[in-house]
Image 1 (spheres, rainbow, N blue to C red):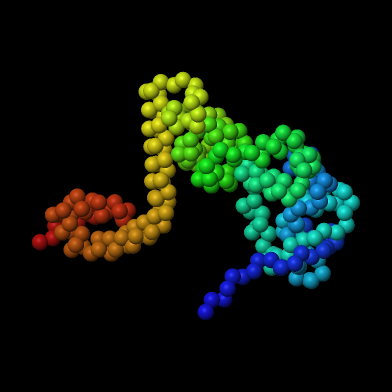
Image 2: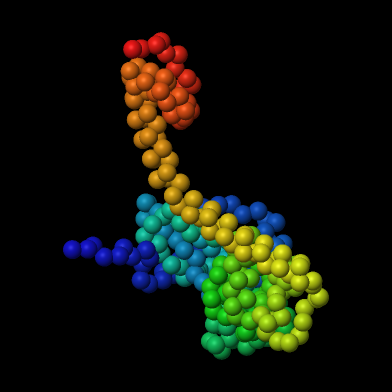
Length: 297
């Protein structure tokens, strides 16, 4: 009988004094000059704290360890807040939350904006909260209109400009997917690379009759072949990566067996006299060079 899924957080938020929180890292005062901090501060001032900080109860039982949310706490302190509602973790390993956290991807920002607008937050207020203009909010809201879901899924966690999605909209869905796969294969997510893919897109795969910059058929064919070969190579690399551990284990077992076998003078001598090419290959595998054998009848 299964034990069930272990719950990672307490069910209820806890209201804590900010002074009771123990920080797990020291932030430089220079972070206050950054755009991220400015957005967090503006957001808290305009619409309050959206995402609660994550804490864990210290062993002493009287203080809480702050696992995630240092910038939010700094912003709350700047506006003279004394208390904050926190999500309590049952695990105090801060790396769980911070190690793989990076800035939001364009798709994640889009979803956040759409969710806030659906919740009734006005465009003006949301723009003020994120320290952006209203036009930027509208662009984020409609960013994925015209982009197929498969392409979105391929790029949903990638850090890239919104302009990349504007380029993808000029392609038909099947070409959007190919372009997204090519970006992932090359780990290139710039607007310039997206434009190069658009330029190399056959007319029949464009979303409209509007043609991109002229390109010769020879150059177009070369670009398409390069894309296909890159995707194929990337798939081969993934396959090799998946099998590497098992292959190394097999090789180690084979090497150990060959060492024992070639350590037998009769076997090694026989191979040396009658099958020198096999003797040479086995010797290279086990890394012991050639045996100097005496003639054995």
